[in-house]
Amino acid sequence: MPPSTAESTPQWTVPGATAARRVALIVILGALAATAPLSIDMYLPALPRLTEDLGTVASRAQLTLTACVVGLAVGQVVAGPLSDRLGRRRPLLYGLGGYALASLLCAVAPTVETLTAARLVQGAAGAAGIVIGRAVVRDLFDGTAAARFYATLMIVSGLAPILAPVLGGQLLRVVPWPGVFVVLAGIGIAVLLGSLAGLPETLPPERRSPGGAAATVRTFGTLCRDRVFVGHTLTLALAFAAMFTYISGSPFVLQDIYGLSPQEFSVVFGVNSVGIVAAGQIGGRLAGRVPLGRLLATGLALVATGGAALLAAVLADAGTTLLLPALFLVVAGQGLILPNATALALAGRPAGTAGSASALMGLTQFALGGAAAPLAGIAGTDTAVPMAVTIAVLAFAAIPPALLTRPPRERVA
Image: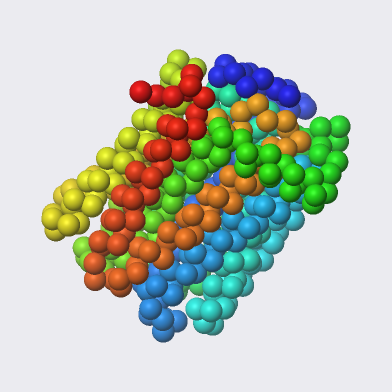
């Protein structure tokens, strides 16, 4: 088992890893991590138009978002353990191929029900990239080194939420909403080809898990009894659910209530995404000098402050002057939460169980996110109160598991 100290270094190197190969590895793993934000964010500006074209209501249109998230959650439970037994490459390549095909099915969906089903498949197939990419990092790094690498990946994966809604908004100028899914299919094919050419196998046969489904269940049971793993996983999942509520609700709130155009919305969304990338890079530079638990606590404080300010802005009908900075804090704080909570949860785990641990984290993360998404539109598109209340509650709920389940040396006063 690799060491679990905060100063852990890379466990082993990728065969034939030149500087160029290492850069390629960062780009590929960043693209894999971007699967979820690309699938979710690129069509956000199209949600109001999609709702009208398919003759449905906002809450049912938001279920297409929930379906994708549910698929991302369930797919990780399958792909993660498979990658522990078969190696990382095969499940990853099959998943990326399925993602491209499902994206094309979304483009030709004639009803909201058909689109919802296709989005479920799209999410399940795309989950392979997320869970296996995270496991690859764990194959190579641990502790502080892992946190730094996750922060580096945010430079690449962070471009996805910045560019995706902008690209989606611009696409809507020249194509109807199905064109967004055609572009997603093309991106899936490009990532598949890049992974095929540039991503080596990082889990050799001697380090793989020999067990089947029963061994996976036992591994999940062991993880669920691990207070540190559960605490960091719940912290990450609740914070992510707060951000996902923003992702789900903001297209309607900012466009229908506050009057932003699809292009203006995409700019606001991009600015918030710059915040998460910047915070991630600051955290990566501080990792090793500042305890990971303290960086995580700082991120939680930013998100909670943003959630409280958002609720105050909405209840006081303060307009966008206070609302937009509050949303920025909610999103930017994730840059300190996501890499550090992930690194702390996976620290010291055997490589042969990293896929299963990553899958359980992803299941919790996307299940909570998917459950929270419809709450943002539960009262229709005439009020922002449900979105604000949900974000604030989730932001504060993420704090107790982080403070109460860490080992004493990781607790922050």
